Length: 597
Image 1 (cartoon, one colour):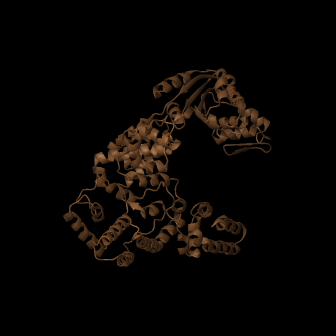
Image 2 (cartoon, helix red, strand yellow):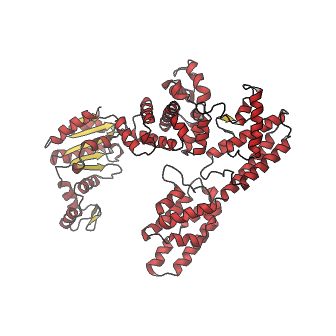
Image 3 (cartoon, helix red, strand yellow):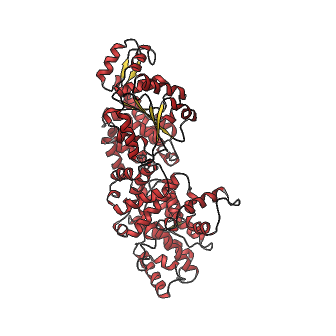
């Protein structure tokens, strides 16, 4: 339904003095029912009550009352009139006794402000029986002559509610998402993407192409596009055609993955299987197709080749990104730069020219070999994927007699090269968060698999093991700078401290998977901790307890002795205090974290 139709009817309904019926507003999950209604009904006359988790009708009446009369003075007056009743509404306690005393119960049921519009939200998530819900609605529309809106998800609304609502629900409106308006609002919450007008229209059009009706999904996708945009440089931005294809493909894949229409494996397989499925003539009703194949056929047939086969982001890389939600700028840039849209023959790295030996002239290949040797001599190859590709093609050339170094000599040469990079502070460390991409890069990178051969595989594995060991050392070398950042947050910004260790719901915590606390003296940690305001002290304890619950625990096992020392230190500190100060310090001890680490 057009938003104008919704507005037209609600404007009419709001003008009715005593309609004696409620209006049911329905729509798919995430279409923005509440948002659209709020845009039409002024805040001053809204009485919005969520039915989610409501356990009895008295709670509904109490919620309506508290929303209609939010000021303390009015609630205090109500409390004075209900001496022995027991209830707490908006922070004000009504006497002592049962949850809702009979006096209070009667009072809040009968006290209404007819100028307010009651909006019952989340109908489908209310555990009460439908006759109980309808009884409450009936109380307000027939007895009090109030105007009532009920918001519900089409597919979740109980059938018996729909079948019995006619006596109370006088009109039903089904709304559709206002995608363009919502997108403008979501784009305004971004920084770089909001000024990227060409791509904004591409994202909206691509989202519409998926037929997704959820504005919640749209908001998540736009946030993801903003994260992707932050990883791009000016060279990428200037290539308008490539950007259109990149964000169109990224939006479509993102939406379909979020909706569960495709899996990580499906994304990985796009490059190899798209043409096979689309040109094979296979249909959804083909009895020989497995459920997995039918799912892919449905996905492939929904879009054209330009939507799917952009090859700007490597699909194996994209599948890992969708699963982990980790936007590693270095890897994103490397993947994009390896696409045909950004790689000219002059810019093509030496290792890739050598890999293309069957398509390039000998003169170009020989120049690439000399360049590769110079790059190793000057320690200019530092990116892990570039390094591994260069190492693999070097072994390929050794096998075929193109260079005069044998396998063993090459192995020792490259291990020394890695040692030199570490000494020069040029070796990229192990990533702080997760190992999805780090493990992946040991097998392929930049959209290409490594040139493997069983004759030299054992030497390659030896080099990779050495590489990972030295990258771990490179990470340890950074701990001192990490320590300074942690202590600065600990002493002055507990929200930042939480983000560093637990993340913010979008990204994982920067230090969530490394044993960084072992590098911080416990006494220094406690001193900085106690510099926080009293109301923030316990938040640090909660962060520490939460740190050790989850998949990162094995990586943090070295912190067990540190946590034990912290608990002992706090206990001793408490013993030097008295009264509530002693109790406060004792309660700060993160025993739960110590238990799980």
